[in-house]
Length: 337
Image (cartoon, rainbow, N blue to C red; front, side, top):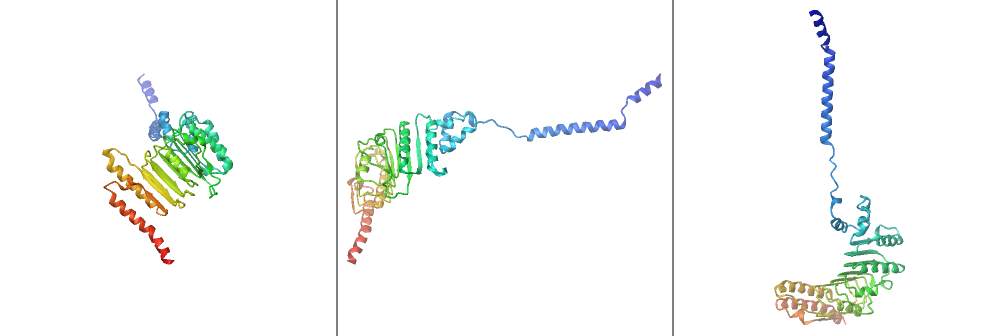
């Protein structure tokens, strides 16, 4: 009986081969577990899309910094982004990436058709203008003004240097009460009726044939105008900037070589506590104006420009210096005669 039990126990003990097999199996299992643990540690963590969780107002502000063609491309990101660009309050179009002008105008028309923002902050267009595109530009102007645009920039280019084929600004623009900043390049400015740009504070006109009556009418019809820039404008023989209601803080005249007569007379009304800083700004404005008008034959400077006690000496010295610069060429001509 005892002998049979000993045999039974010996039969139940694992052999040396079985023991090694069990140890190897255990090691493989531990190695496999370690490998899974390492994979879990080094696996990329997929973070949630936090940008898409932002409010629409913030996302629209971000899209405003992109050209319109790029903001439209964001529509493929997700379902939420599909039509988000249609509410962007800023539109910007350039023809540089289009092979022909017809593709460009079609793209702009299609974009404006889908756009549904109730108010525009900025509307910017830059392309090579041709006269047959006037109806398209008229519609774009109407779209922008209907959306109560705040900043309107129409930068047109052309091979016509005479200005005869420039785009004529639509009449309704001269009575716009919402636009605060206007930038026009290669546009005809001919207001026939009353000019009432009650909110306009900045006006830039470039590469345009101007007449003194038109520019004076626009300036006088802009009571809140603070900044005026004329850049490469032609056919300007006389320029009058005379108005007590104009709040002009900056005026730049660049490359207006056709100008032969200019008159500067404006008043500076500021609070007593802001006088020193305001007068320094106006002094710099007058200085830059005089420098830009050194080629005119007749220059009239209003009394306000010479009445501020703290800068009279410096300004008089500058005017005397400018007169000397003007008189030297005349002296040389007379001397040669």
